[in-house]
Length: 215
Image (tube, rainbow, N blue to C red; front, side):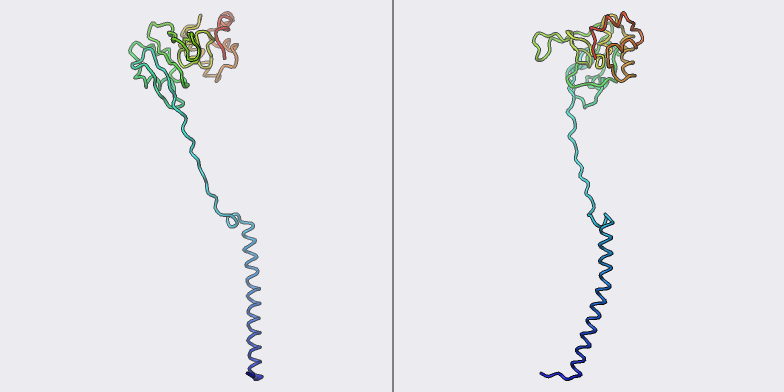
């Protein structure tokens, strides 16, 4: 099929116009693509997807099991949440009996798992010892209060209650309270010698207590 000269010229003109349009579109789009790439490189919100926060929940600590005895309404084992204090244990045991010597308790002291809390009655001077200690046949630990001390070993100055300290020779209720108050002021005893800083403890009493206490 033969084309005339005019038809050929028309076809060439249309091709030229199409080429010009394509070139113009390329010149228009290239800067926009380049600008978009530069924006994506400099703006993290464009370059990266939004971060997803992942949270994990730690299991709660196991409860404390404490033996509460002495002048309480319901002596026996009680379960308490981690971080519980002496006041919580007394409440879980039904509260104090009318004859309880509440002034010799440190209600704010924290408890530990497996502790024995014995509430002295008025006129009761010494906490009775326990019959024995698990894993130590024939032992007579005499565990008292919230500490882990035994009758055959020294009393820990950093965990002993006022009742435990009061049971030491030469330490009465006032000195025991002063030791606990000083412990609360300094945070904890780092040496037995720090007892000399407690009101009511002089050099002679310190020498008497030295083999009976520890930190």
